[in-house]
Image (cartoon, rainbow, N blue to C red; front, side):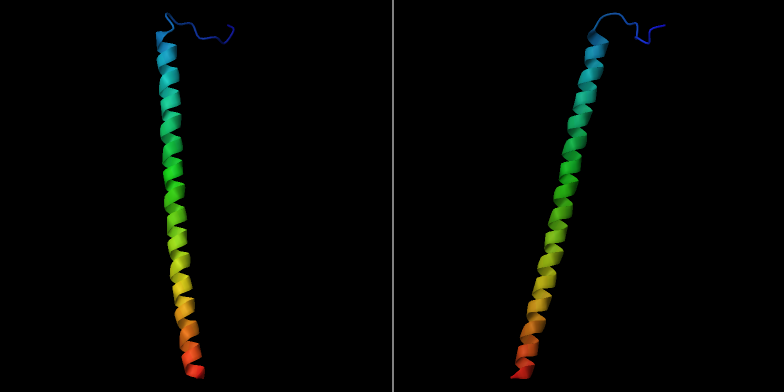
Length: 65
């Protein structure tokens, strides 16, 4: 045996290739969406921490005056 798959017409092979490529597109889109959500979440946390540090700095300035 040479390891090659014996099949009839090329239709099933082309169909499997299309399934494989389609699955690749779907997985890539899902990964990109996940990264976008993680990036937005991180930015939101950074903005919240910046607001907290600014408000605490203002409180310290008021206490010093």
